[in-house]
Image 1 (spheres, rainbow, N blue to C red):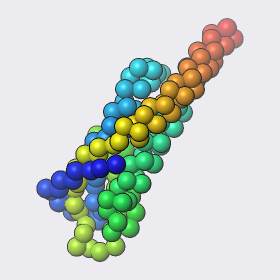
Image 2 (cartoon, rainbow, N blue to C red):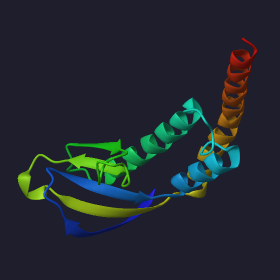
Image 3 (spheres, one colour):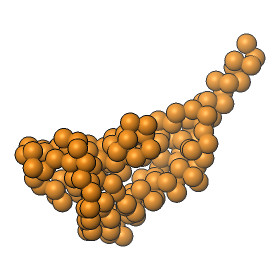
Length: 144
């Protein structure tokens, strides 16, 4: 993956925050929209797998981009406690590196995107099975 980085704000936090734009995120969001995951009345294990897979790729790339970091992890609440600013939290060993905010645009290769999209196609069947199991569970409650 190639990346473009910009940073223009500092915060008073003891870690840095990385906001990310990536074709893998775009593919994951398209998958979720097409499959109806965002409208599902249940928490999807398939969506958790998709998110973890994308984040695994992103964390590996971010560790190469920020080799001086003491650790990078994804957080739904990276920028705000309410969850409106998901991103990656980067820990540092040196206090002079605390509190930076980064915006990273990844440019993934066509091979990387295609491999990710092929995995998503395989996971579509898992979500269909999840949705069916949920419907069956509801139907059994109505009958009982």
